[in-house]
Image (tube, rainbow, N blue to C red; front, side):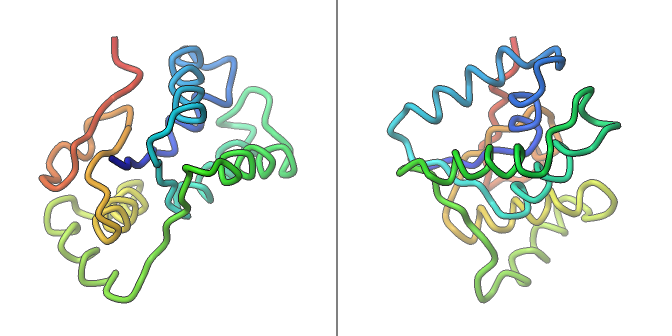
Length: 145
């Protein structure tokens, strides 16, 4: 079964100063070495590039090339799929907006949920409760105790 990964998991796994670094990096190691197909939505990857290179988010920000190399390493895995919007995306996004108002920081989250739905991905690894209202997604927090 395939699953999606939220940007916060990628962020925590890339920042050794983050209190959840160990759990997040171990989770990403399991994803990288496992056999299950996992999906990274383009909006997630672009958000990671934005966060990983931002001095107010990372104590020691990555250079653009370092952050891009991290993305490339994931995309090189044979069981990683990069997913984007396809025809009909807007209608699915509007459905998601009916459950989770797409404003502020929730706009890219609604985008992620809509792309996952469009591609038939029903499980999302995410470290907060924002998506618990979306009935078509099973949200799992891999960083929870």
